[in-house]
Length: 227
Image 1 (tube, rainbow, N blue to C red):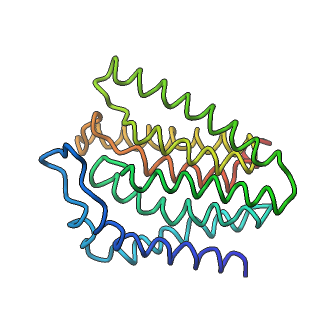
Image 2: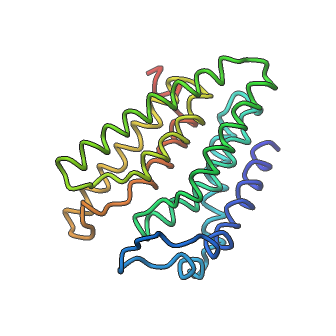
């Protein structure tokens, strides 16, 4: 029942993505080749795709999570994460107006989960993970801008903080596996697609792999870590 409810809630949130995209403002200095958000909102079968993707991610986490009090965090990560994965894959952008509220909601839900479980360490671990992962991604952003022409976007840095909060609330192994899995998936798929000349490595969307990696960390992190 818990898995079904989590999947349903995430699917409903994911399905709202098309409606939200119609109202997302365009960047102040948009790339002339960028597809407008309103146009993306009209993508065929978008509602079904976002709902299905969100439902699968939430169901996987619900299947393995120890504390259902923290499950609402992952409903948000799955639902809004589905929006962001789609947008990033099509525009190479992670809209601040979506990521910033997600950051706040995730933090509040982690805090609520810690309160319900009467375990302040959950919030502390989430905040520590948030700071550490954010600093690592911030350094990578600087390094990529300095030596690789800005191949690593600042939107990925912001999103890393959100995912670190959600993963940190579960444990250190979930953080390690979740972040590492995102890099591995992004690297393997990116190398494959660049070798096939299907993408430009300097305009590669990393956000979708970060989100999927976080779900892997939340779902199988402890199992991988113990082996």
